[in-house]
Length: 575
Image (cartoon, one colour):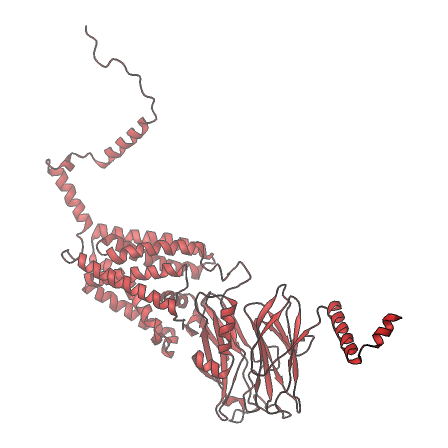
């Protein structure tokens, strides 16, 4: 009774607050999966953290009346999150992914909106979410979608393989206001329809060798707003409404890339950004194609050994001519053999790599043997020239010259590539010594660059990798092959240039008083053999033939296992 009387003396305002607190606490304890809520501001990104198997309601108050539609979106590093307009996600009103969102058309008089983000992961998910507003004059991204599940789909879709990354999106529609009918998509093709719209494809590279979530979220915000996209990213291409809504890019495993599209209305001079999409061309939560285990052990062993041989060739290749020939023959044959077995078999990568290495050793040995037997400088320099020409062709077409539309056609690309190779090979035959030394410096130092790539990503490796991809994939000719040039790449370029120049200068200095090429090894061997057989004063004249020396070595080896005879009288007995 005393408790009830005491309660009656409590002020009514405090009692109501107490009741509300108890109800809220009990609801949270009984139903832990009920969505929380957060208030968002239009046009601003906010950090969002979702616990395992929970959802969050995002509330947008005070939407201005001049806003016609809103694009809501959430981005995570790699974990999937479902974005939905309703608390219970439906197929036609929700989207799941690590960077996904929805288009929401506002009704007449509507001034607030609630949307939901749900995580079905078994661990905490962090990311960035935003609601970006647009007016009736702005184009509607994905407004003429006929391919994907949403009626209006502003998302960008990425899929990749080891060669290329494919980007797809739904065509946009012209803008329209609240309460007005949606313009038709394909009834007419005049300037009053969506066919006047243009699409700018933008690409942005996240800093190399950085897979952290914080770095990703920091740089993602540079690819969401139209102004920020144009300021920070590289415009790759502009498509018209009559072009296919599909583009190909060169796949760069382990390198974070963010893509976005700006749809522009040239009549009203207004623009809208799609929802950005990103990829690392690898996985963060698996052992297959893991972003943390990209460098295969077999690749590290193969390219490390190649780099050590290349370092020797860079500084002493022409002086030790047989080593140069072995190096060139190894590269030439191993490269061709790898292409052959990749196009004709389904063998795993490790098997292809080691078979190519064996073929390369055989090819290098055969070229050295040919030089030893015939001593043909022209024939050997032809292989050196072709290999050097391949390298120069790859470098030239790695520059912006290779991004010209003309070189997207295989005929134009391979004709120029082959012409450069043939010209370099021909010049190499004429000025054999000079170009042999230059080839040693450039090829040997680039082998060191490839060796570094097996441990740390560098864009310089794609000088030759892009050519290899084009040889192996028919669709790669359509891909844009732009790669990032960041601080580490400039360091690698400096190392490459330093090794090449120092190696070339050293070899020119060492060969200053030397003949252009060593004499024919076979003729030298014949002359030495004749000299040993006729000159009895030559100590080598008394050296037994090779067969007898081998038999003597085996006899000595067998005597090791014979039991030693006991010592005794070794002189004849006196009679």
